[in-house]
Image (cartoon, rainbow over all chains, first blue to last red; front, side):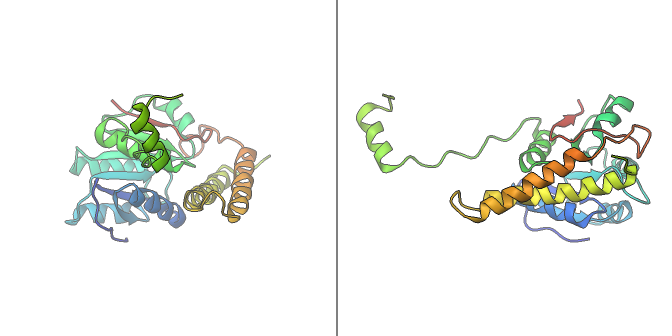
Length: 155
Length: 75
């Protein structure tokens, strides 16, 4: 288990048996303003949840040895019914054919995921909407001069 | 291509790492950085490898499917 740095948008417990996937998720989520705690399996994740560390979201690989992600998430949600869960899987389409209904506070993300895909998925889970894109860079001095002369009208 | 489902799963995991870190590197490198071309080649090769992998049958590993970046949410 590895600990997190200061979060601003919340703390995500990333559970995946693949260290590289956990490292990738950490880079993306920390870049997006989230704190991250890593766990390599379901038992470690349950140990984190039993501790006093803040956890706001669970990002769970579905296909892990020993304890599958869904079983782990159900155990965690029995302790924390409000816990939002993002399942990450390489085979979500077929999984959806088997289980078309998601429970409240659950989401699936296909693996491989993009930077934007992961951040949007967590943002949707958190707030029900996607965070606004970062603001545009400030206009160049020439553009500012043009805007001041024309009131911002395009030629 | 005939590959065991468990191996397909492991390969997808590894390709997810390669493609994900390629994307992070590309976002860090300046547009005129000559190393971008190298990273783009790695990324293209990763995507080609991913496209070569067969979909997993539904009865394997609890489900299978095509990779995408779409997230699906509960109510």
